[in-house]
Length: 357
Image (tube, rainbow, N blue to C red; front, side):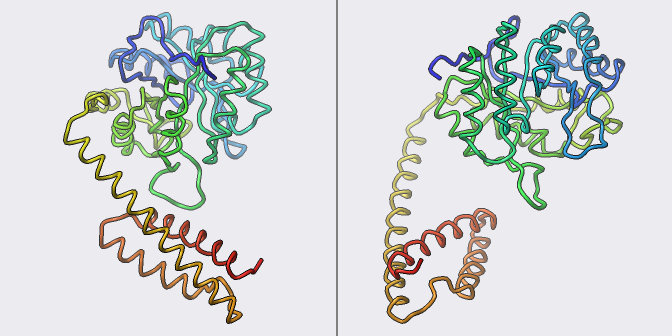
């Protein structure tokens, strides 16, 4: 994908941040128009609304369907805003394009289905539309699956592509609805530096109080913009009410954001980065020496017919190290991930030395 074009839209300045906002779902014409007019007054130029809503379980509100497109047409006519919506199959693409929708996006469940992505790519190509398409990350933290979705669209002739980072689903209860795992979109940006990348703090956080800090964090990491759920009456929303903010609240959030110049490099910053490089080298050296000891342990266990994995010892190490990390101000989840990875590699090397399979 050598010719991905940054998404630039007519009448909208390319300066960061690009903001797309609107309700999770288009519910009624009155609510759509009320929200749109308030957002336009707050300076938002792109209006989003879910026409179709893929839900985790049946029985919930799944969108009004194509009946909502005349409402989006009124939004364009009355406010001058561009419109964006999610599509999940060929019929959605055709109806959205027939209605004059300006931007399409693929949802996280769609991105995880290569057949659905290919169907959408073919539908856009068959329609002959030169339209920007954003792709949300898949449900699971699978970068190659995400890239595969872009490749299917690109190979169909769609080169105005953008990414939306909305976090990844993990089992259990966590502070965020979807874990950011920032290293995955950062790696996507490293591979495709010209691709427009937005963050969806509404989906990541799952609660409106997380939207502002997550938005700032995303901009600090070089994201090009944000896609945020905003509703005229969030408490009455028919879907995901907890993660939507009013247009007034959104305006306050946007006005509080700080844009930092990523091109500014100072001597002090360069010195700090050199320190990081040196510390990384030290970490690698320590890990190498630790693995050497693990290999010696593997030989000892082989000679004395001992099992490689000893759960009691593993639990003891984990508890002690987590406690020490907490005293140092480090996240227990982070340290547990690091220790688990080190233990897994240690076991692998011990197995090699012990000859156990």
